Image (cartoon, rainbow, N blue to C red):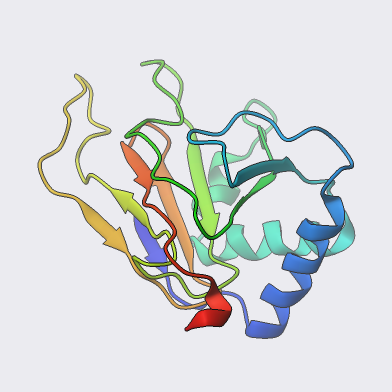
Length: 167
């Protein structure tokens, strides 16, 4: 995994968050680990969302541009919104099929700390044969930061103890 801090401005994050909130109810929330107070919402590829995807491709120094070809496509575009009181997710991988290569990208639309449900990763746990990884790293990041990770990397969201506005 790697992090690009503050790839998006505060204004861009607020605009994207408004789009996420507006999309609630357009389609059913799909499965997400520890689903109570965690909402996994598919997003439509609007102009503003398309611009964000392009920024993510640029922010990875071409990693996504090289990965997305005619044979390799964007598989999913969605938002995971976590609300105060959400319980921790179980440790999991987004993809566990050995021959599939996927990249997961998370953008923090709000500052993220341990109390606000930071993403926790286990470095090295994506290697085949799979290992659990020994260390856990909580990614406490400023608003607008992007986390790029191998989809086989074991990770989880920790419990949310407080709302962003409470800080």
